[in-house]
Structure formats: C-alpha cells, structure tokens
Image (cartoon, rainbow, N blue to C red; front, side):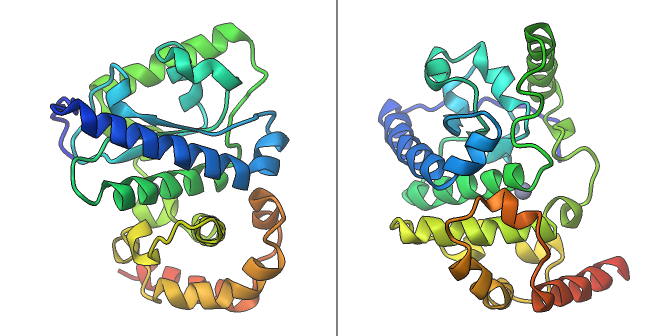
Length: 246
Ligand SMILES: [Zn+2]
C-alpha cells in the first residue's frame, strides 16, 4: 500500500447525509443483533462512524477500519459518539457511487466481523482514562501518518487476518442481517480469493448452515469459542495448506 495520504472529503454534502442515514440504520441493526455480545463487553451499542465526519485523512484505498481501541480515538473528536458510552467501533469511508448502500453495508459487516473475531471487541474497557487518552492519541497519529501501519494490518498476511474465525463470524453476521432485510451477497463481503480461499464461500456457508440455524439466538463470540463443525474445519485446513504451499 502506498503511503500517500489524500483527503477523503466529500464535495457534495447530501452524499454525506445519505451515508450518515445509512450508517445510523446499520448501527441500529448491528447493535440489536450483537446485543448480548456487546453486553458481555460492557457496551450498550456499536458505532459506525464515517471518516468524513472526523478530522482524519487516510489513503483512498482504505474503505473501512476497525480495531478494539478505535472507540478511544474517536471519543475525543466526535461529540455525538459519546451519546451511549463507549462501544466497538467501525470507521468507514463515505462512498460516492450509486451503490453506496451495498458498499457501506458490506464494509460495516466486514469490519464488525473483524471485531467479533478479535480477542476483545473493546480492549481494556476498564483501563484508567489516562491510558485510554494515550491509546487514542497514538492511534490517530498512526492513521494520519502511516495508515498502512494500522494495528489490524501490522504486517500480517491477508489470510491470517481473514481466517477461520473471521469467516465464521461474517457468515453468522450476514445471515442475521439477512433476516432483518439486508440482502448482501457473500461475494461482496471480502476479497475471498485474495485472502487465499479456494473453496467457494457458499460451500463454507453450506457447511455451517446447521450451526447458523440452530444457534441464531446465541452471542456470536460464544459460538466462535466453541468447536467448529467438522466439514467447515476440513475445508479451511485444505485451503490453508494450499496457501502455505505457495
Ligand atoms: Zn478485512
């Protein structure tokens, strides 16, 4: 990724307001779906924040960002953000295309799956305020100066950051969003081939379908901490072996 940094500022304000409306709806539905996951982390809501609403500039290739500490960074720059207390946060670049509904929805689901599959969606929610401020400052510096050094990237290959638990999380999330009327094609949710998946994602979904149907009321992070269905695991092992041999 190039280190060139360019403003993501919108020239047409109505596009920002249309994106904001969509983010509000995404925030509502994702927070409802993740209610028990959020409660387990001491959070009442998840947040979808538009980059264009912040002071940050990032590389135009970056469509969405997430990391467990992101909330602390935004706490100081967006007053509205504080309305329901700290919560897992996804930062999205507003989209200018006619397909922004699909683009932003996919990015939100994708980034939320990263948070769900990380050890904590909201790292150290009880750490002292001083530490939180420092974390926020250092993250904003990273985003401003070296967006390619964002913690989620941190030199790891794409297959490592979009691995088994990420895939399992995103399939559960996509299905729960679908039940609420958000019809998002699986192929739009990630660059699956680029991550190293050779087995079609629909085949993974089929291997997970029983779990998705029978555990749809369980917190997703609780599901992730349980054993994977055998066929799903087998497909993953085969794809991983292929990636490792290249
Ligand atoms: Zn990703």
